[in-house]
Length: 269
Image (cartoon, rainbow, N blue to C red; front, side, top):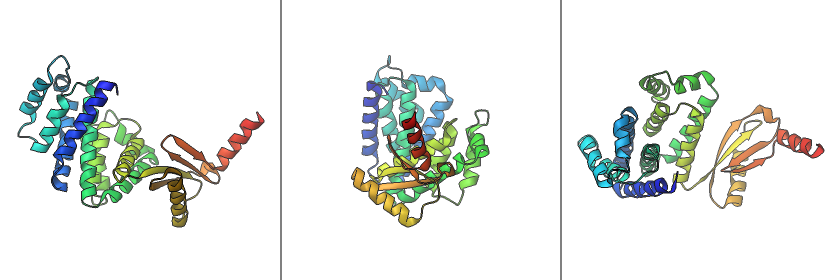
């Protein structure tokens, strides 16, 4: 984002924090309704452009959003939306993307309030791995030619009764807007949930599945390095031969046999 959109996003997030002062149900409703607003904006280009048109005053844009959505969403959601559209955005897409992010944060806030944030984080990671490991499923969920409702129905059938309701809502929103890298989109959501718990996420590729004591030892070692609790997400990758590759943000720790061989090859060259 450019500076204008970063500032607009920050103020919109402040509005969300102010709106989520009630129970976890307020946060859940706000998150779901923000997703519904995004669906309308995705479908109606003229409205989307009008709400981010910097040639029109912010108050006029806020008034337009209130006329369109008043009575259709809760007071909390409307307060967040009117604040967001009153800001000056560098790009129309930045407004919509921020509304998506605020919806995600509201739902994760609800999960945290109800003590289910850890379960939601783990489920989002597992869904991402299942999709990444199943090319046919990934194609079906990211197919641009497939109607959005068909993709939502597919993910709902897969998750119904197997995940937290908030996980299912988040997953439905992801598949409705993501047309590539859908597994990575779930990883980002899982990371966002971990950040809500003030934890760092370590994405680990291991040659074989790690035992619980090995995972705990790795998490403890990473916590000493980074000074914060670490959530370890493990994916088995037999191509590594032995060892693990750990990614924490931009940091990569390669302790695999493949990595050691590559470093040796470079040294010899």
